[in-house]
Length: 463
Image (cartoon, rainbow, N blue to C red; front, side, top):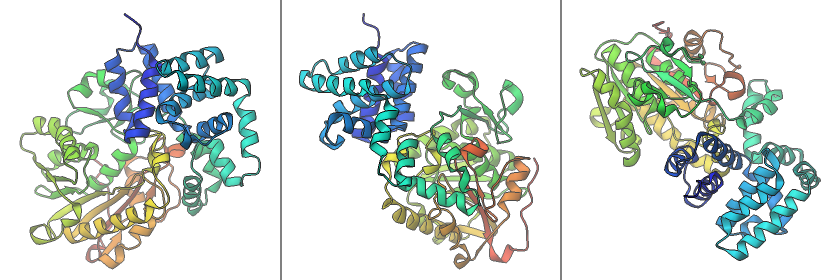
């Protein structure tokens, strides 16, 4: 029996991401298991697939230069094969002959495509990538050059710079771009009431209940398998905890996770609700994602039979009318966004969005915030959260809060109480986390309350 080919696994993931809009972080682990790759080959496939996707823009420029044609004129399978070949040649310690020969072999059933790929990869191998890239970037604007050299679309680079500039930290842009390209360690959350953060002896994160996962497949950790621990970025943990611990919770409170899929924050909120005697409603517009939310909260429900929780499916903009008007004490609005804050974990995300996507998303975010305002009880708390630092999705949206009868709470004080010593930039009452500064996704968090409760400053519970 032939040995499973890690290059084939990586190539097919890159191809499916391009052709079917698949998510690499969901697809790759399953493909590795299906192929039965050894740990060493799994590591190679992971580095190759994620690295190729992360640096796709640069690889496409190199390929187009060597091929003498735009990548849009190359069929999807051949292009995916060339991309992983370019990555081996330019960013992995793979001998040139092996990178070319073994990669071209993936097209052996298509002689014409194989011959073309062989010619392109051999040209790439003849000139160091840095030298070819220098020639390609000659004559480009400073932003275009930095974007290509850092593996970011130019519009994303500009959006990140504007957000940093608001904090007076524009000089941190190179560090942020580098952090986006640095594969992050997997982070875990110990669900409150189900697990103790110190129990596994793991390195802490920015979250008080977060830890860095041990090396290897986290699914093999028994506590993850039984649902008492979960894989979750520390920034997401802080976003949920900022809401649940902004002030002491009273038994009988009603909580809402308005856009709950895929369920990580919902599981954490469910664990917090079980301890507080609160009820949780988790809403998700897409049925298949609502199914993931149900799976996520299942372990909490099993450990806390008295927990009042339910998962519903529907458009979040329907809330705040009828029997949901003024019905909830705490609402998490983790709004759909460009995802520019999670580029280190979702390397393909940077190539999927375009500047034209932002206005529609910002409009949806504003409508969901309006629904949240209608659904909030007087004196209740909304956590407006995005996994994007784009100012149109963050400040521009919460700046509309006053017209909805909402005022900001000092979110920075809440997060500092949760994570003493955390480095926070100057962003007014809101918190903008950064991967290069905090070791988290670039989460934006703003706590809001009703204007008639403005005198009541949020004080962390300190649990």
